[in-house]
Length: 166
Image (cartoon, rainbow, N blue to C red):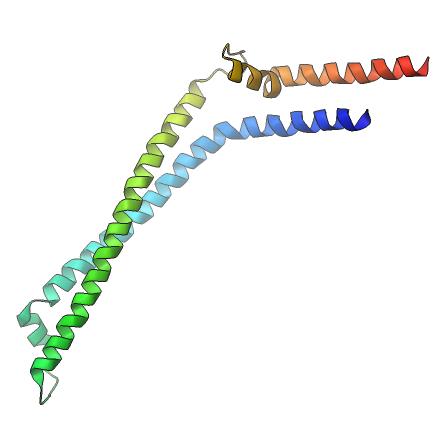
């Protein structure tokens, strides 16, 4: 008997906390997603700049200029080696850019969804019973009805104790 009333009390308390946090968590989620999007955009911009630098460095005259101070008996091999090195780095930067672009698109979609959720939560009445069955149950359990259910459960426990004592 005691266990069931404690269980009911725990469910109501934790459920009320989850419901209260749901509204603020949607707003926090939007803010966190926007911060992540900003980080991705900054990384993306830095990689674009690096890709431009690499494209410029890959021009034959710039490869030649970068190796001007290095003496070698085989300058063609040096130029080819430098070109391969720059090409590999450029390809890696382009692959990272593609990943970041995909991340950015996913974050933009997630932000749109989170904003819609936050808007719906802000537009939802807090203390009114909603007629849909799922929302009505949620209100009954976590809204003002939760406290009524707690009082009712306490009354049942006291009533049963009183009957047992007679």
